Length: 400
Image (cartoon, rainbow, N blue to C red; front, top):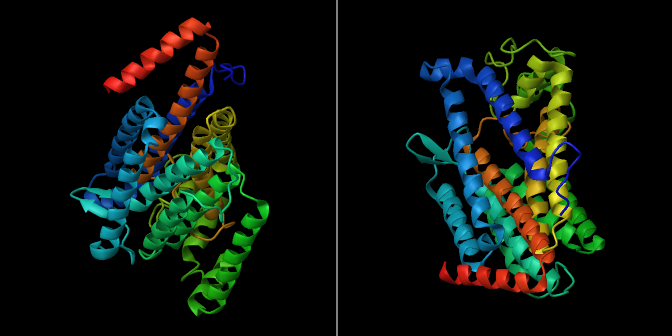
C-alpha cells in the first residue's frame, strides 16, 4: 500500500487520527454548548454530559487501540465472531423482554450510571459476519448471490433476527440501518444488480403498503414532507431543527448563543446536535465539518480499495458505511431530507454506545491497513528472509 497520502500525510492512518482528534474536540465543545442548560436543570452541573462525553471518548480510543492490536483476522475467527454475536443477541433479547421503557421505547440496558444500547453493537456484529462469510466465498472464487447455498445464509438469518429484535423495541430506523449495512456489504461483494433492485423494490412496496394501511404512519410521512402542517405536534422537532439551522446564517450566532438548546429543540445534544452546531457556527462551520467527514471518508475508502484480502476489503467497506453513511444520514435527517430515524452524528452527538462502538470499528479498519502494510513488506523481502519471517509468525501464533 502506498505510504504517501494526499502529499500532507505519510499514510491514511495519520489523517484518520488527526480528523478524529479534531472531531472529538469539536464534538466536546458542541455537546457542552447543546447540553449545559438541560444538564444544569437535571443534575445541577452544567458539565455533566461533557465529562461523560470525554470519558466515552477515552474508552473509545482504548477500545480502538486494543481492537487494532489484536487484528481483524483474529476477530473474524469463528469462535470470537459468534461469541460476539451471541452476546449482542442476548442483550437484544433482554431489552425486548425486561428492558425499561424510556420515551416510549425500550432500547437501553442500565448498569448503574451507565446505559448500553445493544442495537449499536448489532450493527457491527452483522458487518463482521457478512465480511467473514462473503469474504470466504470470494477467496474461493464463488459468486456472491442471495440465493446461493453456503454459510452466507447464516449472515442473512443473523441480520433478520437482529433487525426484528431491534424493530420490536421499537426502533424502525436502526432496524433499517442494520439491514442496509449488510446489503451494502453484499453490494461491494458483487451480488447481481437485479437482486439488489428486486430487494429494494420489494422493501419499497412493503413500505408504501404499510404506510397506506396506517393513519399514524401516513401522518408521519406528511409531516416529513411538510412539518409546518403540525408545527406544535408531530412536526415540532423538525420545525425547531430547521429554525435552528436557518438562524445560524453564514457565520452562526457564535458559540453558546444558540437558542435551540433552551428547551426548544428536543434531543439537542444527541440526535439533533448538528442543528445546534449549525446554529452556532453557521454555514461556514457546517462546511468545515462536512470537509472533515469527507477527509475521513476518503481515508477509509483508500484503505478499503487497497485491501487485497477479501475479508479485510469487505470489513473496511462495511465500517465505512457504518461511520460515514450514518454521518450523512444524520445530517440529512436534521436538515429534513430524510425522516427522523434516530441516528446520532458520530463524535458530534452525545452517545456513549455509539462513540465506543464506532471507534472500535475504526480500530478494525486500521488493522486492515496494518495487515496490508505487513504483506507489502513481506513481498519486498528476499525469498529466504520471507520464509524465516513467515515461520516466526506461525510459531508466535502457535504459542498464543
